[in-house]
Length: 269
Image: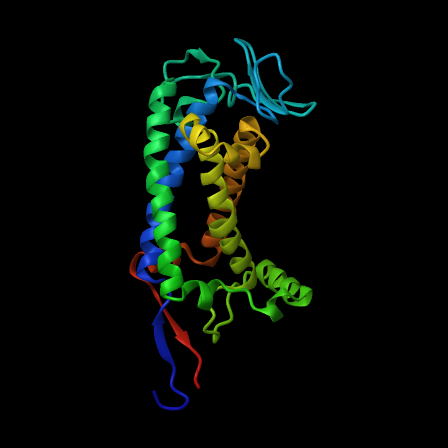
């Protein structure tokens, strides 16, 4: 390449693109089947045990006339959406989450578990392979590694201001991820997603029998279940922010880039 000439490079590696779309499908199925599993006992506890007579820090309540979500001592009415809603036939249902948000759409704990466990294995294997591939092709070192100057508060604040200005990338910078993206992607890939996997394993009776220390790490099976659902909420929040930024930064170009790899110009030497 001659001096002053720009060159193009693939923005998203093949391993990143494959994992992105497989992961998107898995997380959607895991969310919807997880809500079906939650419908069987819509209460969350801390510790090893939890039952209807125990205090739940979070719960979905329902009756034939109303539905509500309770967080601690705060109660929010959700009639018509959560806890009390009407199905496609107009009949009032009192499961925690409506059929359109769950897999399967009818109440079946057994079916929900089958869907959840099957896609959980696909998700876990995919995440492991992605991590290995990202280390081998240096995606982590080159694109996600947060360098020392980027930890400075002034750099982080500058990136936050750029986001409010809808300026997400420096046009002539080869670094395809900004600071906030590095923080969020690294946190999700290396902290939140593994946490979801291990808390899920901690709730499994088979894994509990073989790895009892796993449950102890999280302070009990019910604590692991609570952390698992908090992680699910954080993943949904991440998805909402991700989609909002996608719409603001050009949804068609960004989505096509995640399918084909996309191209980006590096500045002149």
